[in-house]
Image (cartoon, rainbow, N blue to C red; front, top):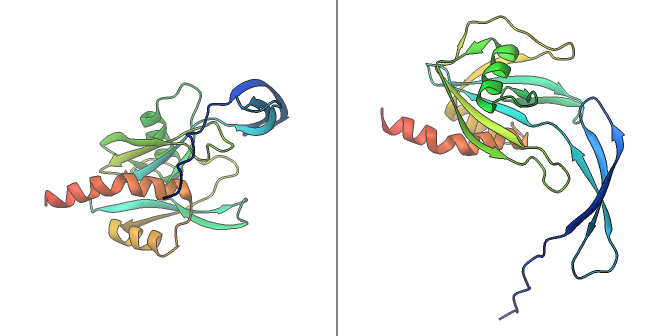
Length: 191
C-alpha cells in the first residue's frame, strides 16, 4: 500500500500590493511563506465583491432563466438571474433585488440555499445561492446600461436535462441547481 503524504500546511501571508484596479475587481500580488521553505512565493488574488444567484420557482413549477451574451466566452450563456451584491447587503435581499431587476419576477418567500467560493485558487469572494418561491412577473425591468437578457421559464426537470446535456455550463448555476436538487425532491414528495 502506498504511503499517505502528510497533510497540507498553512502558508503565512507576508504582504500584499494591488497591481490592478478595475471597476469590477482588484488584482493583488500576495506573498505567502510555506513553513518548510525558505523563500516566499508570489501569488495573484482577485479581490471581488460577493455575488448572488437566484433559483426562482414559479407557481407552475418552472424555473426562471436568463440568456445573455457573456464577454469571457464571446458567446451566449443560459443562466439563472444574479449579480453583484452591494457592500453589506443581505444575501437574500440581494437575490430578491437581482431577480426583480433582471427579470421582473417577484416571489412570496426567499431563503438561502448555500454559499460557495467561485474559485478559491485565485478569488476571495463568495457566491450566495438563493431560492425564491412563487415567482411571478409583476415588476418592471431595471437593467444596467450594459445588460440585456432573454427571459425564459422552463420546467424544472427540463432545466436539469439541459444542465446534464451541456446546455448550461456556468459553474455557479450548476452549483445552485445542485443545492436546489434535494429541495426539489422534497417538494415532489409532498405532492
